[in-house]
Length: 430
Ligand code: GUN
Ligand code: ZN
Image 1 (tube, rainbow, N blue to C red):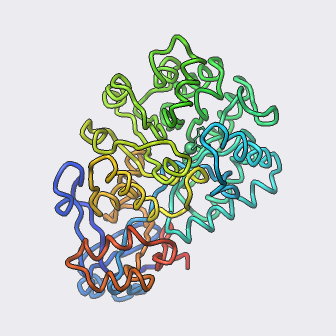
Image 2 (cartoon, rainbow, N blue to C red):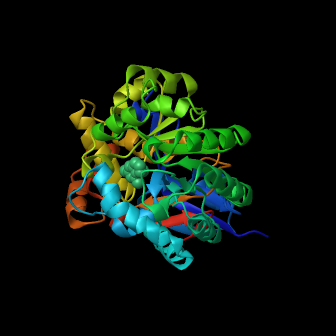
Image 3 (spheres, rainbow, N blue to C red):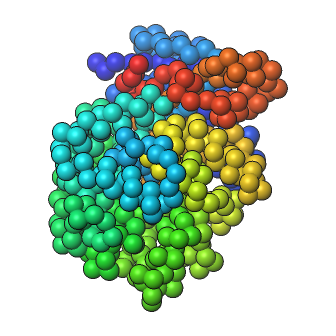
């Protein structure tokens, strides 16, 4: 007999797309509802009293007055940058050279990689993040460390070996051939193992030769079941650099497209300064973009135009971009997305922000049939929010006019203290 658990509280329910219809119609908060969890899945859902009556043998976990959400999904992170998060005073290229590359060199040591992977999962779980798409380093040990830790914890993750064969320190370069061979080995070893998915991961055009991009494109062609993740148009200086390195490319996206690295399962981080042709192609192909708002302000990259991308029906995930991002918290990330929305003329609704951090990210990673919603049949990854977690939030909560006015202070001011509980694969974490 499998264990049965009932989780009850106020349930976040997705009934539509809050970017395609009124946010409050698309995302509902069902008060005093419950989920039945068995063998890692949500097997029933309904009003608390009815579910308890139907399943008297289940263990009941009551979260009265708390908001039960799908676990947060961080659609673009670099777990190897955990220990250099919040490093001062640089912009993208000098930030990479000063802080990131020296830290990533340390992942040549498998013991260090394993230590940081465990630390990363401890931190993200405490912040209510249950799944993520991560870059590793060029080192095979960094991939095994990440997937090994995730597998042990039963977490649904996406990751890949980061490939770079130029414009990086000597100890942090592979080759076109070794990138292909190592990526293929990892893919064959890990993709589909438990809850793990492999993503082919060329870091970005400036650190890959045309030969390497070509090899990555060939590998993706052989494994179209995998995602391909990379960076696109994050900073103006970077785009200029790409123009110099690929003089024949029509634009930044074309440096991927030319080598078979544009597809429906492509996930392009940042994508702030897209030209009209790039937006057209991404929309046509059905590729996904990932908005990384704390990173975009912290590294000084710029303002992602969410409204314009959603008008074009482009799939957008939300992400911390740890450690370019300044926080592990998806709540802090939602707050930053709201602020960037304000600066670009769109006030994102709380329903849209919570949807982006769960269902939106799940869709961008093609995992929305498994995670990102609290529906029957979905995997039981759940984050429970305390909507009055600090004195400052609590006094504002007490003054709320209606459901979304009660939730929004936690979106804007909340952090790991707002995470009342986390369930991963049907197992309680705290
Ligand atoms: N572009 C290429 N590599 C990186 C990275 O590690 N972080 C960010 N923010 N942008 C990148
Ligand atoms: Zn990144």
